Length: 420
Ligand code: GDP
Ligand code: IMO
Ligand code: MG
Image 1 (cartoon, protein in one colour):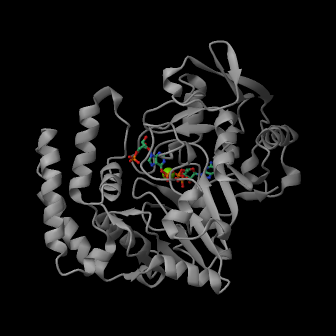
Image 2 (cartoon, helix red, strand yellow):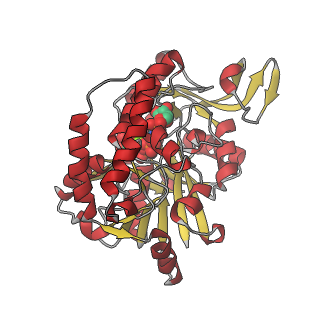
């Protein structure tokens, strides 16, 4: 069986921490989509580690970690990340397996990402500039190089052909930065990649499932950044939702068991695009400061606001969420009043549905207010000891979503999580 952990908002919900927490219960931890646009933060022996390409189960010796076929992989970033993980005494190559279907991110994909964003100007997506969009475009355009291609004798000529195509596109953008240093790094990293266990991912995972092994699929980004169901065009280029597990790993839908959806107790977004509950005021600033809301991948300040239950309920529906995990509950500890968005008002009409192009609508969030709990919850370890005002807040969210909040995370540490 496969359980899934994925994000329900606009990313950075704390998926990495939650995967790391549950990983001891699993035989396999697999990334199924996205690439180094992800930044998943874990604390290992009290030290902070941010993973971009490697699944967050890598610090658990019993877990085999897979980079699935739905992922886009930058070998340069992988190589650097392996060095970080190895500095903790972990034998990465022993426990990391890479699907031969995984698509490669080339240096020119990064250049194209940058050129495209510059060209868009004010209308830019706010991409992480890791080459994600261009790499997935080559995948769907049927031009991509995949990890399995490394085994072909003509890999270099395949690369040159694609690079020429990219050069024509870059010329169109009038982009003429010298990326030769990126290419040198890339080819060194390609050699490094060849030394990994390159697998037929779909057989690997399905054979394990047949043997009764437990698989945990680790989502990157989140529902509202999904290419089909997110706030398009301000999204990423992959299916971040539970359906992406099927296409990204090659497992059938009936093999999916639990879907754990991760949400913050408030909401953040990094990059451009609609964010109905955004607070561009002191309260937003307070959330950013208390929650230390700066991007794990790019360091950009995250936009902050109240929890948006309309978007969250939509995300639960699309994903088939069975259990909700609420992270960063402790960040709200010192707020006197909390708001939750229960509907959107558009031209005076209230709706509880996420409309197609929110950014084009005069959309106002409608809030219900709650009393803050003014208690340090980060030191609490039992649900029964949580303050009543927090229980009321969580209880309302439970009821609105129709999916139970089963876990509350009350700090960045591995053990700071409470089963409700
Ligand atoms: P991910 O991309 O979903 O894995 O999330 P990120 O790692 O990008 O961002 C989440 C941030 O919140 C990281 O800095 C975590 O260490 C931190 N974090 C996770 N859970 C909690 C929590 O319950 N409380 C607090 N205060 N921080 C948390
Ligand atoms: P994790 O897994 C937050 C955002 C970018 C941008 C948009 C498109 O750490 O939650 P892309 O580089 O994918 O073309 O950028 O998506 N974005 C993320 N925001 N967390 C992430 O990943 C993100 N990955 C991409 O900021 O708005
Ligand atoms: Mg992140």
